[in-house]
Amino acid sequence: MSHRGIDRRRPRRRHRTTATRPPRVGVVTNGLAITGGVERCVLEDTRDLVAAGLDVEVWHRPALTGPVDAGRAPYDRLGVRLHRASDYRFGLRSAFGDALRFVRQGLAVRRARLDVLWLNRPEFLPWGRLVSTVAGVPLVVHLHHAPNYARLGLLAGGRTTYLAVSHAMALAWAAAGVPPHRITVVPNGVDTDVFPASTPAQVHAARAAIGVDDATPTVLYYGRLTASKGVLALLEAWGRVLAAASDRLPVTTVTGSSSAPRREPLLVLAGALFPAEAPAVQRAIDALPDGSVLVLPERDDVVPLLHAADLVVVPSIEPEGFGRVVVEAMSTGRPVVAAASGGTGEILAGEWARFTVDPEDTAALAKKVLDVLDEAVHDPSLGARCREWVREHYGPEPHLAGLLRALRAHGRR
Image (tube, rainbow, N blue to C red; front, side, top):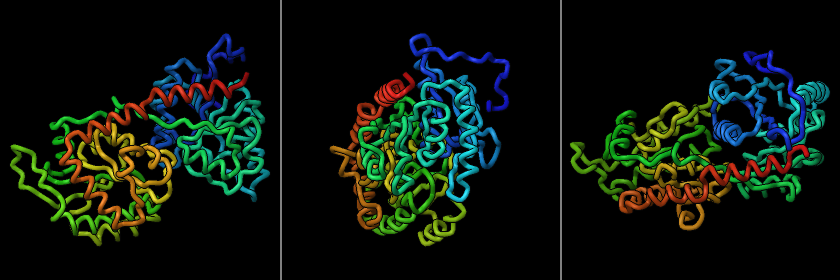
């Protein structure tokens, strides 16, 4: 069923061969609002597919909180059709009703006459399998994160292929039952123009905006403030950082600044604090000296925060599928300390492997943070090397080329 606000007078399109029209892709996501890396990737990929000449339609769930159409505006600007999707969830106790709902959605998708259905939420694979079967459309599933299923069994079959954002995710989903020959690794990419390096004036302005002086060594974490993302481990490690900082960190006062030199570092946490985990996170913050942690709300534009930071930490306990924060930060010239597992460990390869750590070893995490803060001050070339690594390995062009290849190869023939 078409989204409200779409022009219902638009003539119904006839299904022609791919030789006479561009491939028609149905993008399936959860909400449209950017609440994490997946939503940001879906929007950027949709934009790039439209720019490449593909005919794109988007199926999405209404926002659970706030305005029902939150996040719709950029899709409207792209001119893509938006459709309200049914509930994607499937349960054994509600299997019959869920299946009926999926069949009705499949019939609606069938009327769109797609060449390929591209599911960006692998946790909803049962929805994708049944809907694509009813619609008679090949299914491409994007493996953005670790498996939600111990064993996939028959769910992994059908006219289904898979795109993994990292080799780690390809291995994890293969272990859950996806045939390895059906998985193509297509790493994510970021536009380095969208995540630019900073000038000294931009650094000063970004720090002033959050109330941080130029002399304060500043470490940034942004994302969900949860234990699985390593926030509690980071806060425990931060106590060790503070204890050792006076002997380890150099004075960072900018030449000509009137600020007094300050050695005590600041940890900035920017992200959503979920009610279930808020008490534990708050207790960990309260256990640290006053003023040593700055908590900021979740925000879409993270570039100013990156410009304000000397170092970014990605201490996820649960392995990241890719590690978008790592490439965003490095694109702006900020070094990153990240977990050695999952996609973050793959990004930080070669000379960058020494920036990885086991985040559950809080003593090692604290030492790594201090070491990299030292290096960021003493090695002026570090930021430029970070940015060049992203430009060469994780820019948008290789990602888009791989995505287009996969969607065209696995679409309806």
